View 1: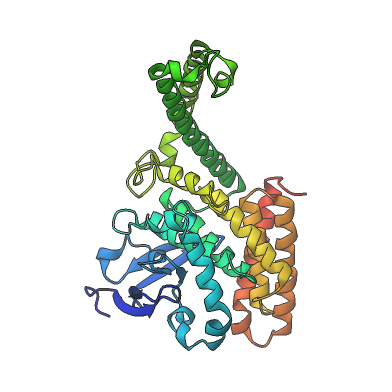
View 2: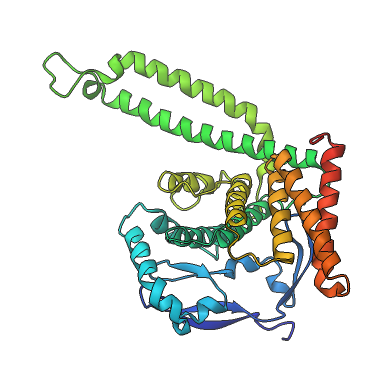
Length: 391
């Protein structure tokens, strides 16, 4: 393709749930190149042939979401050609449709809330996360769900959270990773404190405006006084709580600069009708606990499903795929501070990788990936040992 032409073309696909024919943007072959990988294989460098797209993350187009019913699937050949897949149409399509439409019937469902918040022009990274979560939600509803696919999609959502927070590479030091984990947790505490302050202020306003509706009289048949307390006592509690959360926010404010994102400033920015994107995700988490609200939670979810895929052994052919899966469980365990598990699975990746390389010692092409993974695993074991995180 020419350097100044559009990197996309449109692909028409009929939704297997609602029959809407969508036109999805498809990235042309060779439209961009990636170089360098973080230790969880996130690309570190990306360059589009057309420079005007250099700030575009291809993961925005990784999942395809129906514009009508929000059914979402990884935008690969298998999905594009689902109408030719007899097994899918015979055994899965009806179940997929039933489960998805049942979700949409609830106005407060995760599917409804995520689907209504796809704003690629204004929030491309957040929209890409929402689409990945919609795909995960649809897959999780099915019997025999692919834990391997779910793990891959959670991992990509973690990459997007990382890009929003500056895209820091975490290869250099376990202590760097630990500091990042602490920073993210403090950011979550600050978000919760901001939300609590707003809710307490609402309660205080209700007490100030409608004191007669809060305290029961002897002839009141609606029940006892709220919390058994007077309006003055409750108002005092509210004032004290507001003061305490304000103090907490002041203590945490020095951390605010570390949480700025590349998509319109820090998480204090409004997201639709929500105070922030984190608030939006926390609202959905009340309806579906599969929602991650930051990179660490997404990595934890990915690890959970990679481990389930490892136990099942389904979708994991022997050789490079098994070696890479063992490494990924080790790496995600390391990133989420499960260092004993990390050492166990790094050792497994090293052992099985060396066995595979010995078995195919006359075919270096087939063993190149295994060799790379073994080297990565050895590096990570040494780094953890140097930091005294393992024995």
